[in-house]
Amino acid sequence: MHGVITFAQLFMQNTIKTVLKGAAMGIAEVIPGVSGGTIAFITGIYERLLNAIKGINPSLIQVFKQDGIKGVLKAVDAFFLIKLFIGMAIGFLVGLKVIVGLLESHPVHIWSFFFGLILASIPLVAKQVKKWGGLEIGMMVFGAALVYWVTIAGPSQGSENLAVVFVAGVVGVSALMLPGLSGSFVLLLMGMYTIIMPAIEEFTHNPFGPETTMLLVFGLGLLIGLFSFARLLSFTFKKFPNQTLALLSGFLIGSLNKVWPWQKVLETRTNSKGVEVVQFSESVLPNTFARLPENFLYGTNPYILEAVLVIAIAIVLVYLLDRFSPENEL
Image (cartoon, rainbow, N blue to C red):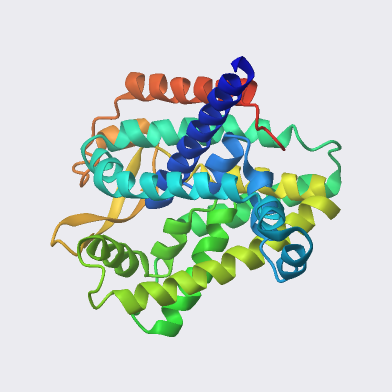
């Protein structure tokens, strides 16, 4: 009886942990500039997630014939994915309702937290590279330069054309899978963030409204991109682990520009509710931030001591997660 209770307790503990990790990934994907892939790295489930998604393929038919439904569930790590995706759905909704509001009321503090998370993640990913050579350094520099360029690129004009919506789903989920590249930010660059996010929010109120077709096409793009990119990343991890991890380290370095707490707002937009929000901004030093004559949403108070404290808390949190997480599989 004691063994049964212990197993049940462990099962519940692991379930709660996985759901919470999924929730953190879901929250991250709401925010342009923060990647769900980064959160997966931080919480030690990245490679397990890739392998689970890669397992969803036509060979499952043969697995089903040989081992039945139990074999299929094991092949795709189904219970892990279910718990993770439930958490992501919860986190996504929480992000829409809560985190976005906090970004509007306390932008410097919230971005400081995300900056600390990513900053602390860089050495944790980089230390997984068993041998640093010229190629690995080059891959890291390339990854950093590429993502930095993405963070300063100007947004395009979006479209509700279903073909464009489908491509946005494929590209957005590919960015989701890459630490340092935010799916939401890539959608913003494509001009699709202001189309997809309001449609999702409206769908939560009216599941059978006019946005349903667009979201189904977007979801199809997400699925195709998810399965294709997971297989590609899983292959590179297996064949070129050092180079892949070096590239991902570079992605994280480059993304720091996007989550820098002190931003000068360059352009705003009106969202679906008629509220003015930040469309594009650039990173500035805290003293420059403090001297701005005006700065929409962010204000001009740099809150330096508070920001440094929040960054430090985030760094400590990442290292505690890395030290005590039983699922760190990198």
